[in-house]
Length: 183
Ligand SMILES: Nc1ncnc2c1ncn2[C@@H]1O[C@H](COP(=O)(O)OP(=O)(O)OP(=O)(O)O)[C@@H](O)[C@H]1O
Ligand SMILES: Nc1nc2c(ncn2[C@@H]2O[C@H](COP(=O)(O)O)[C@@H](O)[C@H]2O)c(=O)[nH]1
Image (cartoon, rainbow, N blue to C red; front, side):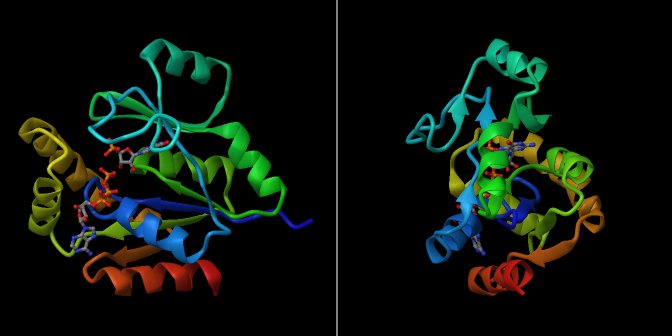
């Protein structure tokens, strides 16, 4: 059986990766979305094992030592990583897998999966990114400032990825992602 495709969506926090991934999965339920592990505390409404595997720093560091993560990164003071086993199983059984991850982790994927399709999602502008982070209302003012600072570095790295898609109009961005994946 042919192995599935590994699809990575990356870009700054608040650009709309999660929104786009939810829409993509609703239209293409055959795609498998990897659930990440993180040491970040759950936000109100987030569910363990659905939104993330919420783990302690010790548990995360053990996962690193035991090579249970395909990639991991420290972002805004917390660890985030992709559990290896399910991704490898899904790919081996012919299913395409989607990772929604930040830029450092997306870079690392290139080393282990050079054939992965890595799509960078850009905001129409930094001021619109800030508006989205604020409107989302999930992070403190300090956390938003930290994410925006990080975003400037991340945006400068967009050319490293296979595709750059601007998430201005949601439907247009989604159609461009679909075209990149399925054609
Ligand atoms: N095209 C768009 N136009 C306007 N608002 C958008 C668009 N796409 C997403 N948003 C809004 O922007 C906010 C951030 O989106 P989302 O949470 O999907 O970002 P993200 O990139 O997944 O962030 P994080 O990396 O922190 O998880 C949400 O409130 C979402 O509804
Ligand atoms: N390198 C990885 N980055 C990940 C992973 N899962 C999520 N993320 C990214 O972290 C930031 C912050 O997420 P938030 O939920 O706190 O807003 C965001 O860019 C996510 O895409 C992962 O497994 N590895």
